[in-house]
Amino acid sequence: MSTRKRKAEILALLAGDDLGAILAAIDNFLPTEVLNPLFLALCRSDERLRWHAVSVFGRIVARLAEEDLEAGRIIMRRMLWSLNDESGGIGWGAPEAMAEIMVHEPLLFQEYVHMLISYMREDGPLDFQDGNYLELPALQRGLLWGVGRLAETQPGELVKRGVVADLLPYITSADHVVRGLAVRCLGLLGASEAGDLVSELLVDETPLRLYVEGDFVETTVADLAIEALEHLEVSAVSGNG
Image 1 (cartoon, rainbow, N blue to C red):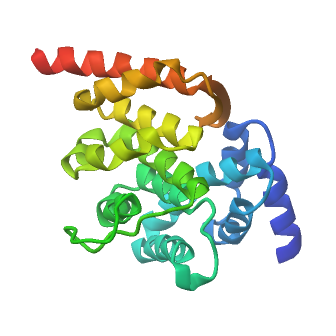
Image 2 (image 1 turned 30 degrees about the horizontal axis):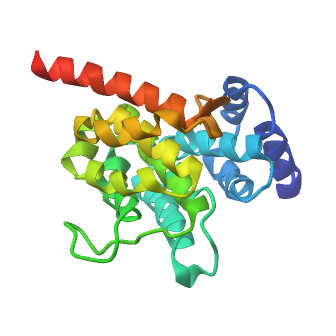
C-alpha cells in the first residue's frame, strides 16, 4: 500500500464513531505507519477525528515505547517543539496527546509530566526548568483536558507537584471551557481547599462539550462544579477516615 493510501485509510478510520473499533483496526498497522497521519489529524477541523487521534496516540506511542523508549521520547519532544514559539506552529492537540501517552506509558509520565505542568506556569524557577505558560485559551483548553486526564490516573503525583495551586487561576478564566475543565481537574484531585471557589460556579450554566472515553458529553460549567464538589466531599470523608 502506498503512503498516500495508508494515510487516507488511517484518517478515515479516525473519523469513525466507535473508538474501540478504531483501536482494533489500528492494531493492524505498525506504530511507525500510524504516527504521521495522527499528527496530521490533530490539526484537522473534524472534532471527532482530532479527539480520536488523541486517544490513538496514547496506545500507539505506548506500543512504540515498549520496544524502543527513545522512539517514544522523540514523539514527546516533537510535541513539545510544536508548542515552542520558535517552531512556527501552534501545537494544536499536543497537550492532549502528551497526556494520553503518559496515561499509557508510566516511564514517559515520569520523564515528561513536569513539562506538561510547566505550561500552566509563568516564567520562574521550577524544580526542572522555567515555566512555559500558554496564553491562548484554545491551547489552555487542551492543556487542562490533559491535566484532567492525568488526574484520573495519577492524582497523587499531580498534587505532590503543586498542580492544585496552578489550577486555581483558571477558575476565573473568561473562557467557559477553561473554567469548566479547571473545576473538573480540582474535583478529580480532591482539592478541598478550592471548595469555595468551585461553589461560585454552581450558577454558571454555560454549556460545553467534553470528550470522555471516546465520545462526547454535553454538560455545563455548573454541572462540572457539582461533580467536582461531590468528589471533594468524598475526598474529605476519606481523608478524615
